[in-house]
Length: 212
Image (cartoon, rainbow, N blue to C red; front, side, top):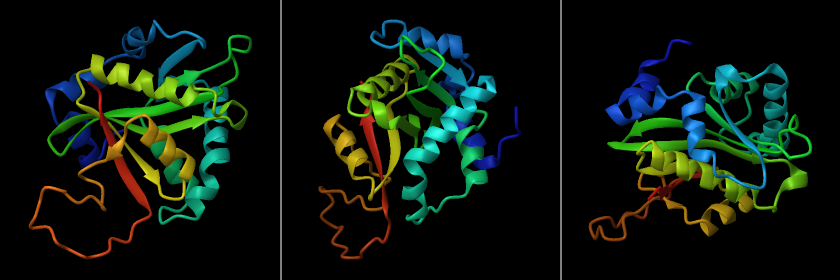
């Protein structure tokens, strides 16, 4: 396994719960998804992905997200993105049609992390091919993450979404995600002392949802 940075080690080993989750094999994680219907699904660790699958995943990510990243503060750096995308601690939930199991039509990428004293399942990517969007696959994949998160005793699912990704923002709102306390624009509605009028200049939000 690639050597982790100090920051990555703190995220992946910050609690015993997260450490245990990160030691689970793909087969062990897949047990939580056995009841899924409609599409066969698979869960893989990044270092278990076949080259043709890696190519499909990257192509789908680039197709859906490149322009959004280019026009954001994050920018688009393929080498940096590939390092994050295929990180040794990344897990992939893959969805293929019943009649074409070699084609990837949707996937989610996640990691188990300990951040701000919480054990979380961080969803790094949720991507559906253009021909299969608005068919329920996004909801299916997020439910799969919820099931895995609950089984691994995580507290919540977190993710980052760009402001310009209007469709994604609407989708996450519909399925119950809210602005997380660690998001740059979050303001505690019960904190009367927070009367700051400072404008936070960011073009993304951090959302979360409890897994229970």
